[in-house]
Image (cartoon, rainbow, N blue to C red):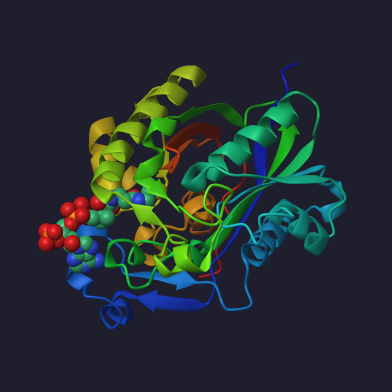
Length: 334
Ligand SMILES: CC(C)(COP(=O)(O)OP(=O)(O)OC[C@H]1O[C@@H](n2cnc3c(N)ncnc32)[C@H](O)[C@@H]1OP(=O)(O)O)[C@@H](O)C(=O)NCCC(=O)NCCS
């Protein structure tokens, strides 16, 4: 019998502090109207001074374990997708393993905003091959720590957060297909130049702001509206499904105009393309599991729904997963 990987638990976390467009108006030369029209974002959350990426990830992971009704000791793999790790090393996954009380291998994967899809690919492959049975897959980022809050071109876009899923071996799919892609020739379009081995963060480089996110917004926009439909189509073909069978497309939450353009290009009604970017901003690796958890907890996912989870980001990287939802719709109290 073929061994599959299915999502059997989900959780997410947004830090408390809200940064609204009105707050940003007081910081840089921008307006609520410009930000909403160009990005669809109204507010985003900021990690507190004592909250690092691992802390955001731990809350989301605990919630995912609770939703799967399993204890930390039955997890046999932790994969954390992030591009704002607590430190260069130890990995954020190692810190989370300790904080969560797990007894398993734990490592990070880094593919900028596509990190969660890469983490899902890694964990699903481990389960399908029989090397793991229950994996915790986390997307967590405190990317605002790397944002220059005097640069209006980038500071309005990003927010912090975390999302997590528990993946378990199953006789029925689950994660039906995953495709990944990379085009390193686009590396300069979106980058944090300093702080790595190429340009250690010296005082002079920090004065120039090279430790912050730099982006060619127009080119990244054009890439995103090409990459998402292409990756979705490729993953659908790999799983033998058509766009019309998708109940939800859950794209990386970067910009409402990207999401609307993608819906149009794929021929999907906008109401089946999930968006919560208005209240989260771009939370990088966290955005897809956060969006999925929003869909789930708001009662809009039912067992057997077919979903496409699709990411893109720096690298350039992209990835898409076709997922058969198995969790029952939660009973809501309101
Ligand atoms: C960044 C982005 C919102 C900019 O929107 P845009 O419509 O392309 O705007 P432009 O960059 O062409 O800038 C238009 C003007 O607005 C100005 N502007 C930029 N940011 C501004 C802000 N926050 N407030 C007000 N004006 C702003 C620009 O300086 C420019 O002014 P100019 O015409 O006088 O030169 C858009 O390109 C985008 O979302 N790109 C994708 C980014 C992304 O998803 N990154 C993460 C990937 S994981």
